[in-house]
Amino acid sequence: MPLSIRLTLNGTPRDIALDDPRVTLLDLLRERLALPGTKKGCDRGQCGACTVLVNGRRVNSCLALAATLDGAEVTTIEGLAQQDDLHPVQAAFIENDGFQCGYCTPGQIMSAVGLILEGEAGDDPERIREGMSGNLCRCAAYHGITRAVQEATRRMDNQRQGDAA
Amino acid sequence: MKNFEFLQPLSAADAVAAWTPDAAYLGGGTNLVDLMKTGAMGPDRVIDITRLPDLDRIETTEDGGLRIGALVRNSDLARDPDLLRAAPMVAEALLAGASGQLRNAATVGGNLMQHTRCPYFMDADAACNRRVPGSGCDARGGAWENSAILGQSAACIATNPSDFCVPLAALGALVDVEGPSGGRTVALEAFHKLPGDTPEAETALEPGELVVALRLPAEAASFAGHSRYLKVRERTSYAFALVSAAAALRMDGGRITEGRLALGSVAARPWRIAEADALLAGAMPDDALFARVAERLLEGAEPSNDTGWKIDLARRTVIRALQMAAAGTPDRLPPLPASPFGPSEVAVHA
Image (cartoon, rainbow over all chains, first blue to last red; front, side, top):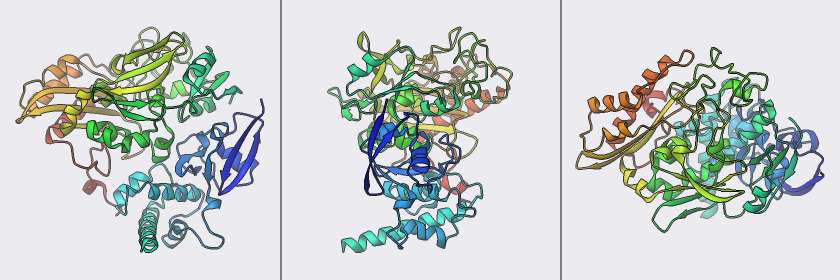
């Protein structure tokens, strides 16, 4: 049965024909839409490397069947920066050594963006660590990751207050 | 993954009509898609129920209880002000489960329907009576150290891994289902079945029945001031429980008027014993009482594999959960929900 879905992918509407209902959002992005920034780690929802935003919320793209997502807005790591201007979370990861090998980093960053949007962790390191526990880093860059999320949270708060003023 | 026919019905009636014995209902997919990838599950037809209308709502019922649609996401329910007011320990249990990403996808109905995390159930090549009736049980004598201590059988030593269902069982939650012969309600306490000789019958659902809502009775709120969920696991976050306990007390002038307890990850369903609850009614809270209650709740516990340690751990977890409940529900959920550790005890990397 041919399936077709429409996604708004990093802000651009895309009509996508699926020849197979088994295709996950992760495989769709990487193998069929030439967006390999989203990484495949465990492929079982345990490592967080494949984290993207669906309708503004962070999810594991390896466990989402693409066929279920008709009408969804999807944001991947490729959609964060505005041309050459990095997203505050991307900039904070670089400035705080939030990675070593970099493989888990797109998932860490997307998860951090989702966590900050949820708005419950603030800059409390304990709540950030708990909120980021779905993203594993085998290089154990956790200290830098926590600091990066703290700093990005503060920067985005200031930005919002600046915008409102 | 085995191929399947994919259907997206737009009403519960159409979903139920589309069901066949080789079909599976798909919600958030966090358990089913994983099991389809390992080959442990291979439905011929996948019925995506996420387009069904009105099942993503949380409503206050006429009698003052809560009715929670089966498609409400775990993360939305955990933040719901009405749930936080009526049953804060349910929110605490939700936030102690899985990760932020998984909670955004996982649904209320899917949480009830999730399968055991026994590694032999998830391994398509292993013998598992729960997955393939009569095939045997590789878990017994195998390398699984988190198996049941209560209610297990010769056929199956699986546990139910849900955090959410543990406080729900203690608070007398009800499950509304729709099926080929109409709608009915099942008590959550009776929803998951002990394995006996038929471990493949995991729940009380009849073939084709679909969970549409969960109901929390109004009286649950009378425990809100003194109720806690405590979860002990191998790491501080993002792990299934070794043992968990939900403790809910109704207090009057320092005396307990009624108590409710449920244990998680020790059996194929949340473990409750009415006689253990009864020991709490009318008593003053103290450690000697809590120890007697724990003994009664764990009466008949037996290790499967090398799980003798779980019996001791469960006893201590019950006592600690009762102490925490007696001390009162905190105004704001702690940074590490349901953890035995406070922030100061683990903040070593700050």
